[in-house]
Length: 119
Image 1 (tube, rainbow, N blue to C red):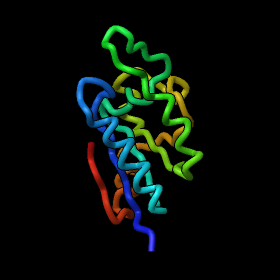
Image 2: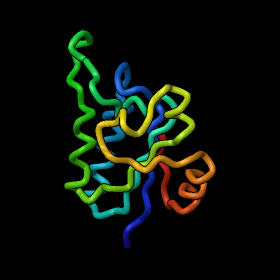
Image 3: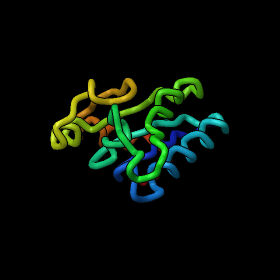
């Protein structure tokens, strides 16, 4: 029986391994046919920002990978509205389609999960 996994991304995409590790866990959980949701909050919203230039830090920009998640039946991507607004971003600034939810709605989604992992 599938479990509901929610991965909460709170860290900026570069400067640590958190964002890439989260992406790996998402793909592993999906491979085992689990019900996977991804949340982007706080500085984690930057993981989805369009047009990131990473050449100066000698790192590959992996944000386009999020567009491919749909191919793995991962289509529950949520962004906390307050985090977007605090950083001057909108859903149009992101590399893939997401559902923008406020903190209260996000808390409700979290209550429905079997497993929550924070990165």
